[in-house]
Structure formats: C-alpha cells, structure tokens
Amino acid sequence: MKSYKILPVILALFFGSSLLAQTSRLKAQFQEIVKDKKATVGIAIYNFTTGDTLTFNNNPEYPTLSVYKFHVALAVLHLVDKGTLKLDQDIFVKKSELLENTHSPLRENYPYGNINIKLSELLSYMVSLSDNNACDILFRLAGGTKKVDRYIKNLKIKDTRIAATEEEMHQKWDNQYLNTTSPLAAVQLLQKFYQMKILSPTSYDYLLNVMLSTKTGPDKIKGLLPKDILVAHKTGSSFRSDAGLKAAENDIGIVFLPGGQTYAIAVFVKDSMEDDTTNNAIIARVSKAVFDHYSIKK
Figure 1 (cartoon, rainbow, N blue to C red):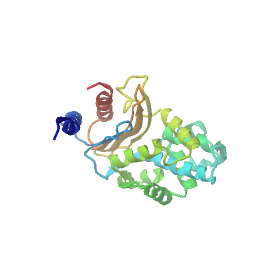
Figure 2 (cartoon, one colour):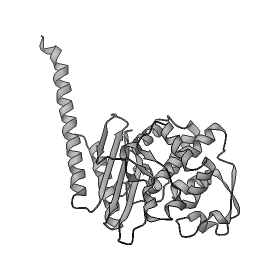
Figure 3 (tube, rainbow, N blue to C red):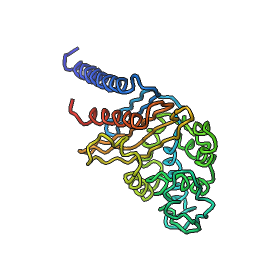
C-alpha cells in the first residue's frame, strides 16, 4: 500500500483523538465547577457548526420549571402557523386569571385585569419576563398540558414531560417535579427550533427575537460572557422547601459567536442546597467554559 493512501486514515485518527482530548478537557472543567457543590448539575451542548454533541450528568428527571415556557411558546406558535390563532389577535384576560402570590409582571401592570391584550404580547410576557399567569393563559389557549406534552412528543423529543400548569406547581412543593426533561432533550428541541424544523419563518423570527430579549437570569448563561454576545434563552427557577432545598435553577439557550459559529446549551441545577448566587454562578461558569472552548483556537 502506498503511503498516500493511508494518509487520510492517519489524519482521521489524529483529529479524532484531538477532538476527544478537547471534549475530555471540557468535561473535566465541568467536574471542577460542580465538585463540592450540594447539587446535581446536568449539561448538554450541541454545536450547529460542527454537529458535535456533549452531555454531562444527562438524565430525564431534571425539573424544567419555567424553561418549559419555551415548549408552551412552540405549541402556541404551531397553532398560529395552522391559522387557529393569530399573533395580532386580542386575548381577553380576566381579573380572576391574574393570580396573586406568583411571579407576574402582567398582573403588576394590569392589576384589575379584564383587558384585551395581543397574543404576541402575552407570549412576550411569558418568555421574556417569565410571567406565570401569562403561561397558564397560554396553556389554556393551547388546549392544556396534555396537548402541549403530546405536541412536544410528536416532535420526536424524548425524555420530556409536561404535566402541570404554573398554578398547579404552586399548589404543593412536590408538584415542581411534575414537569421534567433531560438536558439533551432540551438541546435537541433548541436544535430543531434553530434549524427551522418546527415553526414557519415568521413564527421562528418572532420567538427568536423574544428569546433574545429575555430579561430574567442575566447572571446565568449570559453572566460571564462578553456583553456583545447574543444569547436567545429561557430561564427557570423554583422556590425553596422549608428545609432550604432549591428544586431547580435552569437556563437553556442558543449562543451566537462572532464569525457565525452557533451552539445550543442547557444547564440544569437540581436539588441544590447552595444559595441562589452560587447556583447561578455554576450555570455562568459552565457557559463561560463552553464559550471559551468554541472561541479559542486550539
């Protein structure tokens, strides 16, 4: 056999081993970030440029909390694409739908309710501001949790369960664990969304811009990244038990690097006894490690 025939094999082995070493270094960084932390941390990444997928502590039992508002938004926009709903249609919001004792900028802005509000604005409240009342109103428009759950499953996304509204999650501590996902499933949903396999171009552009405008969790995925880096993301955060246990602190999103490289990332912090600052710092440090991994020339 001539030497030039075996050169591609040698190169493939070299670059394959190099990629494996780089991935191992990144996982070692994750391990360093989470060591000694009183929490379970799950991570998944998908690089749209290279097609690489990486997971860390991936299992299907991470509580989604408000991350699932991204799933609800997809289900609602699917109905928009079908013509069942329209982004510019008025939705009547009753005062009785603006529940107290839950995160709701919508209620704060319209405390007396009984208003008409555009569907597009309701979606923005739910995603950008993580409004719980807006979420449950949109659940009802989408046909309830079972229909949203079925819609996500029909997208061939495994290891995801949507079973409780925001109101139901607030009724009992354990109910926060009814809505679950794996980090990989969250990234796969972001992948399908970004590759425009789910929504029409108009609905895709709308939701992407809403996610780019997310106001919650500035110290999570975006926390340690350069200020000019665009991140389209959706956060989630639980309340604590009487013993101080935090069910979840989450963030999923799409990060746009200079030069056109893009990746999806999901970081879930589960069952944490750390304070909120530490939980958010875990997500931020993981995000920065991934950013550096893809930004720095090897």
